[in-house]
Image 1 (cartoon, one colour):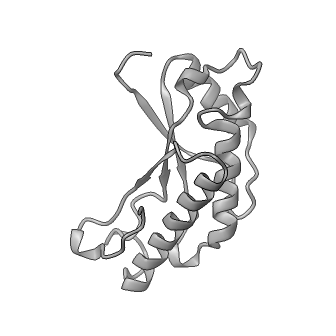
Image 2 (tube, one colour):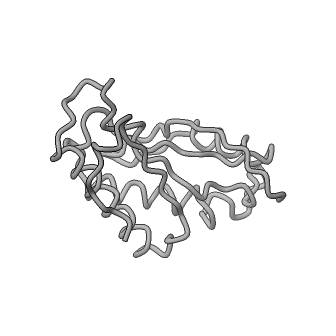
Length: 151
């Protein structure tokens, strides 16, 4: 694999309140990795980060990574996928806390997102997946962000 990374982002079809993946997720990942493109899975729940069931989301995200990310079971004896291009990063929520979304951005909402990221990092590390990077995106005003999450 050369040093250039080409990413393709897609919303993962599994609900993170249930962790059920669809065949379209497998098809998307297999197709991109075969074409030497590294997928960038977008893992999200609709609505405010303060409404996310953090333990359930974390467990589902870890399960997803165990299957589809670097070192995942999806690539074992699977000629339809190229493990060299397995996802090594996750985007968590799509621009949460942006002023264009349909909920008020409060310090509690920002802290909820930070708590989600803390839980996810701990879950990944506990599962031996500490090599998976987390892409955490925020609003369009840096002053909205006051929480430290990746220590």
